[in-house]
Picture 1 (cartoon, rainbow, N blue to C red):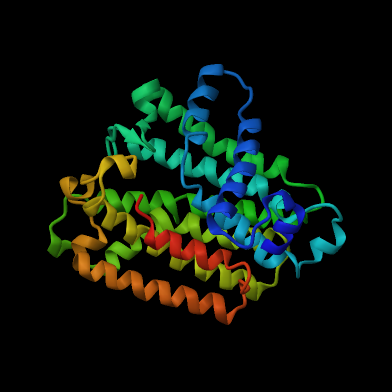
Picture 2: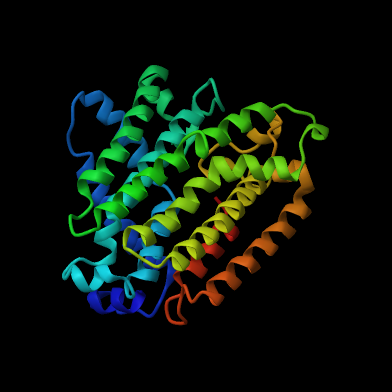
Length: 326
């Protein structure tokens, strides 16, 4: 938890401050990702992959990995048996792998055959810089590199069966039952009349497209570190809540945001008639749903002791997912 974070880094001289926490954790992540992409052949492919992975982003999924690891590590057998291995080092390859998968999904999502976007994270999209063919291959490369990195870079003191279970679950969250399947449903209902879909349809789309990887980001570190089944399931449910809330907020920002703040083109959902929460229940209905999800998430954290009073990391990440402006 954050007490250890502060005690190990006394130069920060802070009580819990969420922005400082995010900045420090992002710094460690960026250092690791930069090392992962320091070299490789073919050089142009690695350059294209790095362009999307190393561009500035919220890094929400990686932050969830770190927060979940800190929430369970103090009670995990690994802490006692793996002297010198801290929670963040233990799950860093997992966090990096998730960011690679997320970057892959953004590269492919932006292609002309899908959402046809020109702007991502305030920069030209990958295919605008490297061309459609290289962007497609960069996404493919990132997906495979994510699995390779998770297996090869995870510390040998981490239980191999837990690593295998997490690797399998990552494939499940990414593939036809998760993110890819959700994207297909999104395509199927894009352009549909309002009468052709309902809230259940929208929730099913986003449970796969957005929610599956966020759920995995909270469940996987607990599983990797050997946490109890109860802790793993509590964090998985929290991931479902945050994933749903994150997507509702995205749908709202597409209506209320601007390109400068968002770093991407607003109004795309309405222009292409995507099946969104705003279309299904309106702006006011979407905002009410967000309040409901936030309350459920806060209650889950409290009831399962996933945070503590001095370091409310998961509470802060839940709030951040809902109240962000980009």
